[in-house]
Amino acid sequence: MNPVCHQVNLQRGVGGGEVYTGFFARALDSLGIRSVLFAHPAASHWSARLPSSATIVPVTTAELERRFADLRGASVVFHTPLRGPALEVLHRAGASAIAIAHMPWYDRDPEALRDYDFIVPVSQHVADSLRARGLQAVHAEPLYGIADLGGRRGDASTPLYRQSVYDWDPRKLRDRLLSIAYPAVQRVRRPARFAPRPGVALGIVSRLTPIKQFPLLFRHLAPVLARFPEFHLEIFGSGGYATVRDLRAALAPIRERVRFWGTQGDVGAAYARIDYLLTGLPEKEALGLNVLEAQACGVPVLAVAAPPFTETVVPEATGLFYADPRHDGGAAFAALLGRLAAQRFTVDARAAREHAERFSNAAFAARVARLVEALRQRGLWREATA
Image 1: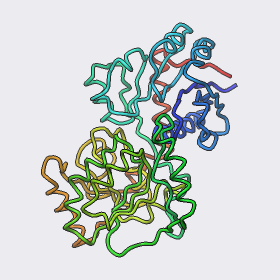
Image 2 (image 1 turned 135 degrees about the horizontal axis):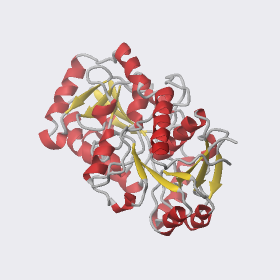
Image 3 (image 1 turned 45 degrees about the vertical axis):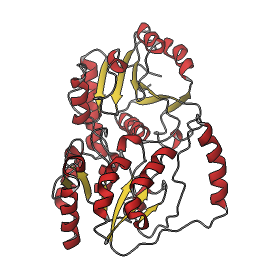
Image 4 (image 1 turned 120 degrees about the vertical axis):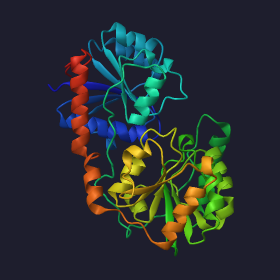
């Protein structure tokens, strides 16, 4: 029987952490290590994301205690950190608890990770934040990630239609009511099909989550964009009601040049519709899988000159940086738009290929192999089988 790595991801929906869990499991599978994933009972997306060798075990948080008690000497990787009795039960069973840090920790409670045996950062930005918060059991090598596009690198001939821009939160009464009313209204409307517009297409291809800080970003950038009518904005992604509301308000100065398309099943086709990817603000971002995806599709990235983007973009080769608009009022962004209006920036194909190797499946699997070896040397990796 192959060795087994147990993993925990209790998120209901799909975001970067869930995409990451999928290719982490595939990397383990390439090393001959089978995954057993403890997942939220309402999460129905895992079978399409995990290798065929993986086992999915639906559990509630309360049920984990019983499950953990049976994991004698196992290695358990957490994508959603837990605290309290469940972790205590796991340690009493002689198992090791390894947390993958999918977020920077500068403004988060370090106690949430204090009881883990080892912490694995997904970028140097995250690693620095963990150590700044006094956490020392941190893996020396950032794990980074891959551009997971399902084998597709962008096709502008694939038709795209407007989808819902909202992710409804069933815990909120407002969202429960709107989740019924909004789709009903949309069903009586003819779905809008994407058609290109003249000019330069800036794009957001991302979940519209608070960590991206898009409303704050565009409170600074929208007035600048208003001075450059040749640029328009295409938004592929969905988010919570409040985030979408605040983003629309921030984009008011360029309202007529903004289109929301919702989350698309073929993300490569979304990248094929834009000239440049715009990232969110940097400090709450852990890695930016969309940054890796855009570069894999040959789309240049426009980002604030700060980690983690400075770890994943090659300046003047796969993207361009500008100063944080909170510091200079958007002056550097205005200069960048002026440059792009005068001459289009294209990706340096050779530099992009070399850069992409750092974020390939093979490179990621090699980093996972080095992680397993580091855990083994620390006595935290057990060759359990199932």
